[in-house]
Length: 227
Image 1 (tube, helix red, strand yellow):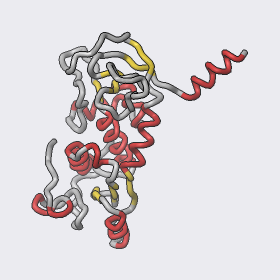
Image 2: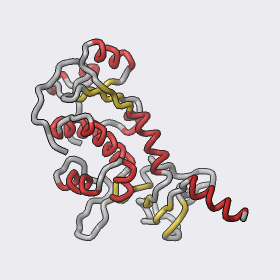
Image 3: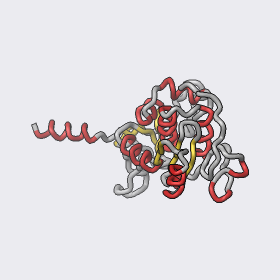
Image 4: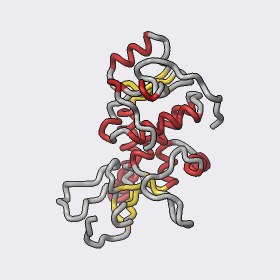
């Protein structure tokens, strides 16, 4: 979690650290910051759960706004420690967007986007990117439309993070010797959906706890029934 200090911004059309007037693709600047009543349900259900009032075939996916994830689940899915999660929340690097720890005693609740960004932050830290530069990347990821995130590729040279939205931009960075490794956000998204599908979640509208569906557990149950 140590920071290597402030790195100089690297120029290029995809750099997230360009001056404001040149940030973003196509000349568009990057943003800097970013009830319906339902029938009463059992407090514990099976995940993914059927949405209230909807046909049984329509189920809530892990990325749905109707689901939130508590701290331990977010840590397990992102591959970080609870100490890291708590520190990042207290220092403002990434606070939960569904529910904070205030008022005192409340459990933090993270959205799918929050956990996705946590997982990306972990990979950037492992690559040696400073926290200062990671904050810029986090701000951009939080302000980007959720539907657009899957199409992004983040490239990093160990100091600066770049955003690429096309294969050609990735190639251009590699040709210039700037990109050392890349993070395909779409691939991280798919991996995270599988992981969260096996872990517990909480409905944001009813507070219902939804139990994850671990294929290994299901296989064990079937074997036990066969005995």
